[in-house]
Every structure is written in C-alpha cells, then in structure tokens.
Amino acid sequence: MTKEEKYKSLLPQVQGLLAGEPDSLANMANLAALLHQEMGFWWTGFYRVEDEELVLGPFQGPIACTRIAYGRGVCGTAWKEKRTVVVPDVEQFAGHIACSAASKSEIVVPVWHKNKITAVLDIDSKELGTFDETDKKYLEKMAGLVYGPQKDIWFAAGCFWGAQKFFKRIDGVDFTEVGFANGQTENPTYKEVYTDTTGHAECVHVRYNPDIVSLNKLTELFFKVIDPLSLNKQGEDEGTRYRTGVYYGNQQDAAVLSEVFSQVKDALGVKEMPVELLPLSCFYPADEYHQDYLDKNPGGYCHIHWWPSNEND
Image 1: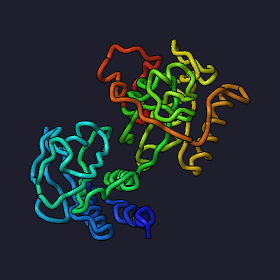
Image 2 (image 1 turned 30 degrees about the vertical axis):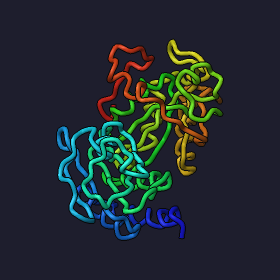
Image 3 (image 1 turned 90 degrees about the horizontal axis):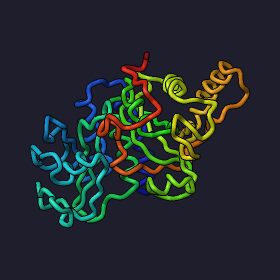
Image 4 (image 1 turned 180 degrees about the vertical axis):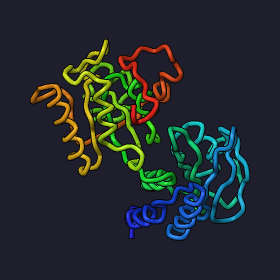
C-alpha cells in the first residue's frame, strides 16, 4: 500500500473518530494516537498556542520539549509563517531545536480555528526525507478536523483583500487565504496577475465549519458585496483579474451553488449574469504581503465597505 493509499484509508477513520466531539484537546489526543499507530511515526503530537509560546499538548512517543517560543525551531516557524513546514533534514534547518538527537526529519502543520492558529501538529521521523507533499495534503485535512468538520470554497469578489476581511469575520469561517484562481500561469506573482495576461482571478479561499455556517449562507453573503451585473469590474477595480465567481472543489457543492445563483438571477430579473460558477482548476496563494492586507493597512482601498459581525448579518 502506498503512502497516499494509507492516508486515504485513514481519513474516514479520523472523520468518524472526531465527529461530534466538541473538546479540541480530546480530539488532539485521539488524532495523535491514531496517526502514530497507523502511520508508524516516531513522534506525533500537538503544541498548543498559549500567549507568545507553544506549550506541549497530547502526544505519542518519547518525552519532548515542553515550551517553544514564537518563531523558534520548526514548530515556532510554522506558527510564525502560518504555513506547513516540511523539513527533510532537521540538521539543515536554521534554528532547529534538538529535543532529541534521534529526530532526522519533521513536518509541522498549523491548526486553525476562527482565523487564528491555535496549535500545531508536529510529527518527527528517525529517517531522513520522510515527509513530502502527500503528507502535507492529508495531514492538513486531518488537523483541520480538530475543531469539527471543515469544507472549502473559493470566492472571486473583485479586490481579494477586502473579500478576505469580509469572510474572516463570519462565524463558522476558520481559515481564509487570498490568492489567484483558475488561470493558466503556474505560481504567478501579484505583478504578473496585475497584467491580466495570466488568466487568473483574485480570489479568497474560505475554509468553514458547515455545522456553524452553510455554503448557501456564505454564497448569499458573497452576493451582498459584489455587483453581479458588472463584468470584470468591482468598484474602481477593473480588469479580468477582478472578475467575480465561485469555484468549488467538491462536485456535491455544485447543486447548492446553482440554486443560490438561480435565486439571485430571479431577484434581478435576468437570465444570465457575469458571475462564474465553475470547478476550481487551480489556486495559488498570494505572497504574505497581501495576506490580511486590510488588517495591516486599515486605510487601504476596497470596494467592500460592509463587515459582518456574524453569519446572520
């Protein structure tokens, strides 16, 4: 059985194990135990965010460092940089914290809740080069289940930093990330997308808990902050990169989205509108400078001026 086949087989077990349990600490404990047992990792566990440091949480394996400062080591770096960090050789990682000389490679996955990193999932191996993109893909999915079920949807609403600020304030949204969707150029830069030659749309990736907020509600809110009859233009932002659309990764979401689109067209009295409804073909995160841009630059321009306090607004 390949590594990916193991993960595919394990994912439904994780979903079933954590389903319905509201205590995140209990879920961390069971997830660490299951991964450690089924995947044969050397050390598997969580560090919880407490003030300005990571504090050891549930784990399986030898004794470990109790506290890790923000930005220190692989765990602190993943927290600071808000991304999964894969390290083929820990001795080559600048600032590595040697809790044990037996650890040779490592992967650290942030755990998000209400748009904040609340913990990291840390896994170590006694072999070099153990972890890769397959581990990253499935461990991110599993870590995302600590606080309940999660689903993903992508909204192109013109200016992506305004859309990010809008969606991250909705109760039930756990993670947002701006980037570029459904174009032809791989890993484009912001400047490249700005030329309107890449085919990409500015987009916000939204990860949400469907037990708290529905896809139907999120899409209804999306239509409240765009002009659905404007082609390639929202506010003062104009160009194909500012086109509007909803992109889904799960075909089962298509029916829900189609119904909302039909309701909007009926309300507008039109048969068609220039808002795309398509499967997601690709998404590339933007650079850190553009993530949470309006939080860093409160006076920045955006055509969106309404910020919800919860999903019922």
